[in-house]
Length: 311
Image (tube, rainbow, N blue to C red; front, side, top):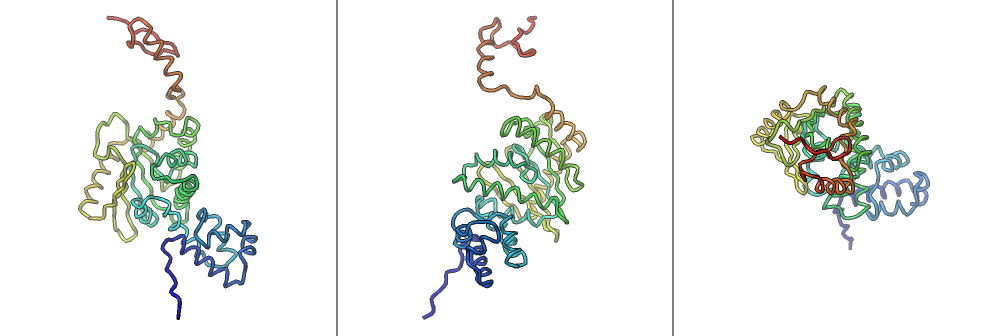
């Protein structure tokens, strides 16, 4: 009787089965293959069994090279890492990987395609769907790997509108934010990348409270994706997508022009007075203010509490 073979239920299992098939076709042991790509044989066993940490892009490239597999494992890798993200974000990433034009608005954080490693870590480590430190590392690598398309041979056009709050919120601390803003200035030198800042002075708008992405495919198909802290929605209906596209065009029109946006990013990066005092400092300042004549009717002036002039 022929024994039935279970089909892979995850992309990690598919990756492992393909790796094992390629290795056996070469007549190599796990130890031999591990030596060729500079990893322990137990790591090869984990990959083939879909246990332990998921494969990295660098390791997938090395395995393809040694096995002569014509980039098979590299092609599978993006689907493997996407499994570490919530279900509601995977469909978006599939579209993003194929998009020729990516138009985005983000209200709380820098867009994932523009994040530094430290900034990505700071944002991903507070995700409520995060289950382990291992998964955090997988998500960081997955997010950063998406950025490779921007510098590739046929990169997408990326147009991002950042809310001013993105620049003002010290995600990861002052050093991380300084590096992140320097990264924004650097990536905007690429002809396919444009960044605008939507200032607070523009007031309310239709995309407040989350992010909005409009993706255009090579065949002209356009989809929209909205995302909050714990959920996301992919919109494929043409009429709804058109409505979201109009909202995005309004955001882009209300935002500062690209050159002025870069000036604002530089200003925030260089303005040391924009740094928020640490909590102990704020507590001491509050105590000083409450004890001064006029109570809370005080203002800061060069680090000291000075009473406002009375009428």
